[in-house]
Length: 426
Ligand SMILES: Nc1nc2c(ncn2[C@@H]2O[C@H](COP(=O)(O)OP(=O)(O)O)[C@@H](O)[C@H]2O)c(=O)[nH]1
Ligand SMILES: [Mg+2]
Image 1 (cartoon, rainbow, N blue to C red):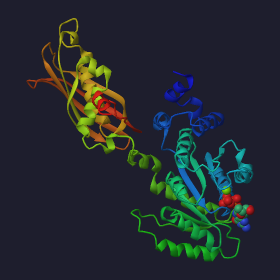
Image 2 (image 1 turned 120 degrees about the vertical axis):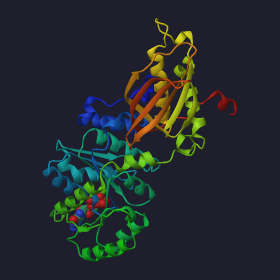
Image 3 (image 1 turned 180 degrees about the horizontal axis):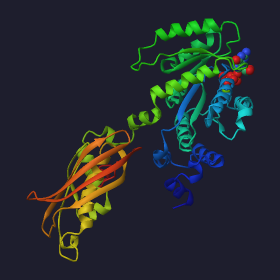
Image 4 (image 1 turned 90 degrees about the vertical axis):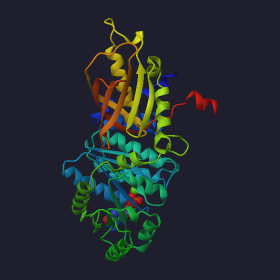
């Protein structure tokens, strides 16, 4: 295997990255941008460190005053002791990179602050996969321990709506003048806005724009949450309204919670091309295929006899080769039998479940010729963690062992194994 292929497979976050070291953060983002690390590997490796940052999305038409506002917000957030990362996604000037440079200059004063990290994404007009990329970069910044992550993007189309979905709190900026607000509505962004800001409130017409926006909010489908979308005015040159804006943003963050993107990711249907458990009709067949694709399980003679979402039963008839020097079943065989049922049941939902701990009791010895069965059932399952109980019994009902295990649920889809049967039918 090439060195690069190994890096793709084996990537783990460095302690420097997790400690928020700026150079490590910058290097990791470059890996993401250049596709040097597999997104699945990245999400999996970062998973235990995610969901702490408050992610803000700011969108609005080009020239609405987003970058200037972000600069003003940086000042206020720094005064509140926050560590902040800014990701500027602006594909509107793909060739010259002018807007990107402009953003750097505009945010420059705070950009040098040790608690601020600013990254402009050089999108060069490639919108495909941009939201995906942004999401991974947000993951990197979240894992690096930034308190607040701000994504600035131009609200011009569906990809911006997608980018905004990554954020916990979505802010739409409109400068005075009807054009900007109309554009925001076209993009469907108003539907997902949590806070509306009328920028440049020093300019004439700011109050009219605020009124228009409030009227348009009435057209929005009523939302399930109790949050009332505020319409606030800011003036970047005097910082008027900025502290109030941050107050409302942080209030929304407390009400909505953090890590909305992680929830959405967990619920996202699997890509249409891949056959993952999420869209598999016959879960039992799919779980059996997982067991059959496991060389260790196969080598011991363990087979899956029953499965469904959150449960699995495996069985084994003991032979001489399963016995220890005392002539009874090897403890490792019993553990493997129980662990196999645990692994199949916890992965049966289609997301990779990584074992965190397992505990096993040995109740009774088993001997050659005994038919053992391990049945795993789900005790509890939350968004991130699940607990399973496995009962190992003999054909006559005698309890051989009981096992409990906990898994961490990643956002990664379990790959459907290529079995001999499916290979033949290809
Ligand atoms: N009068 C006034 N001009 C502003 C204000 N905020 C930004 N601008 C100007 O609006 C222009 C666009 O600002 P910018 O932040 O780059 O907008 P973006 O494209 O949305 O990021 C710049 O020339 C800013 O100086 C404001 O509060 N008042
Ligand atoms: Mg900008």
